[in-house]
Image 1 (cartoon, rainbow, N blue to C red):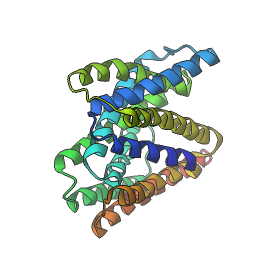
Image 2: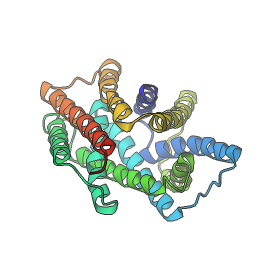
Image 3: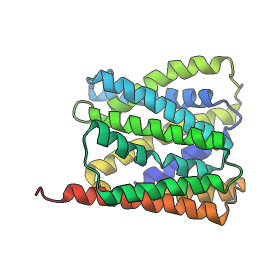
Length: 276
C-alpha cells in the first residue's frame, strides 16, 4: 500500500507537470497506456475483456472517467495537496451510496467521523484563496463520481476480475476523451510523451499494488496508509511548486485524513465482530 501511495503521488506530480495540456487530452493519454496494459494482461490470463456484469461495468467505467477528468482538472489549477485531500472525500459519498444500494449498516460513530471530514474539506476551501468555489465544487463532484465507481466495483467483485473491472473505464475513456480533445489538442514535445507514458504506467502499477494489498490483508490495516498520500502531496507541492499552505488549511487537511482513517478502522473492526 505504501508503494501504491508513492506511485499514485508520482503520477499526480506528472499530471501537474503537464498542466499545459487539456484535461481531456491528459485523461485520453493516461487511459490509452492503461488500456493497452490491461488488455494485454486479460488476454494473457485468458479472461474475457468485456467481462460479465456489463451493466455495472459500464457504470463503473463512466463514473470513473468523469471522476478522473474532474480530479485531473483540479490538479492542473489548484495546489496538489488541496486537490488530493478534496478527492479523499469520496469515502463519505461511498458510505451514503452503500447505505442506499447495498443496505450496509452505518455505525453512529462513522457519521461523526464523516461529518468531521466534511468540516475539514470546507476548511481547506474557506481559507485558501487559490481554491475557488468552482474548483472546490468540481473536486467534490469528482469525489462523488469516485464513490459511484467504488459502488459499481463492489457490485462486480463476485463476477469479474479486478483488472476486468478497471479495463471498462479505459475502453470508454479512450474514444470519448479522444473525441473531446480533438478540437483542443496541444502539440507535445519529447518530455511530454515521457511524462504521459509515466502517468499511465505508474497509475496502473499502483492500482495493482493496492489491489494486492487489499486481497492479502485486512482493509482496516492497510487502507489508512493510503491517506499518507495527502502528506506526500503536501511535501511535493511545497518542494516542487512552492505551494505553501496556511495553518488553518493544514488543520483542515489533517482533520480530513484523521477522520477518514478512523472511519476505515472502525468499519473494519465492525465487520470483524461475530454476529449477535
